[in-house]
Image 1: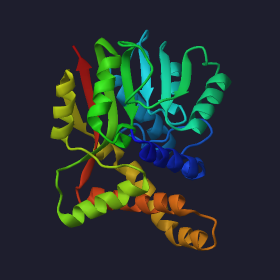
Image 2 (image 1 turned 90 degrees about the vertical axis):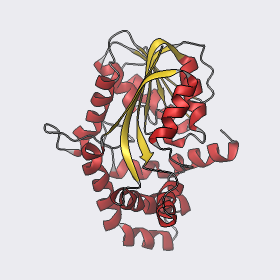
Image 3 (image 1 turned 90 degrees about the horizontal axis):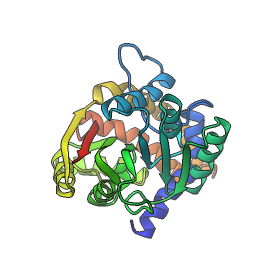
Length: 283
């Protein structure tokens, strides 16, 4: 990952951490991702945790697994995995303050013997070959400038028979109509995401690296309430956000994040992208 793009991602998460803290997750949940709603889960807080359950079930996570949380954020999923399974988890992120938050949370939960955090690029890590049985990427692969690089490193790091599980955003086609591309990137730019790939682009890149059992489920119907919740909050607070920007209490990055939170759902409604759950295996 080039330095300029890396710095833009770090800056995004540094500048928006208060937004996430106030509007998204609570004291007991450091989830910097969307929630999964089903017949039993109806609240925002429970839906955030439920996505972890769905990912773990799809990847067949079980006791004894050694897991890489690739793009771990503040460590919410890493800690959840260690709380619910007898596993060891390494969380990596580009963002220094997220490493610190993750380490503090692990110590507080008395999980620091099984959960560790470090500042690393998931496309170029310092781990040995075949170090992990599961690689977990929750709304993080989208930040990879070249998705192929992510798959190459994931394949190197996985043990034979290892699984890769990703919850993320996928564009419906390439190219979109001109207005569609404009709207899609109006969202992506504010969240420091270069671009999204299609199903076929992901499949080609993954299989080129050696992955098998490529499966991508469209789970938009289960995440839509969470996506709509963000859009609703962002829309209601938009005028207030403009006011805060005008008096200097919000910077360009804060304001861009707010704007993108509105545009993301608009792009979803126009079927420019969907929310997918991707699973693969290494032979």
